[in-house]
Image (cartoon, rainbow, N blue to C red; front, side, top):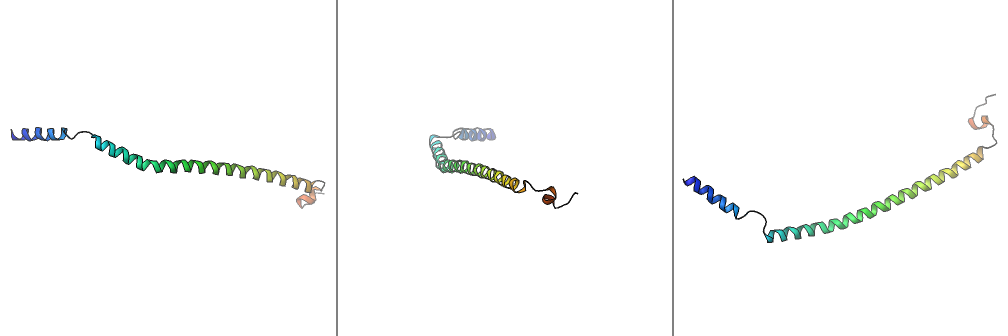
Length: 93
């Protein structure tokens, strides 16, 4: 009979401490806000930097494409009118 009594008394004491109280909820919420606020700023700054990097990359690619087009025009103008042997270094006569 004694073991039954201790079982019920333990169960009663656990029941009184179940769940979160108002103080624990307020402390947990405050802690979450204090930790997540700086992380939000870091996230927003990271997104801004990623957008700037993407724009710079696209600008560099566009400039490289334009430079290559100008080089191709220059190379075509230099080679126009020459014989094939002069261009390849071989004489196919």
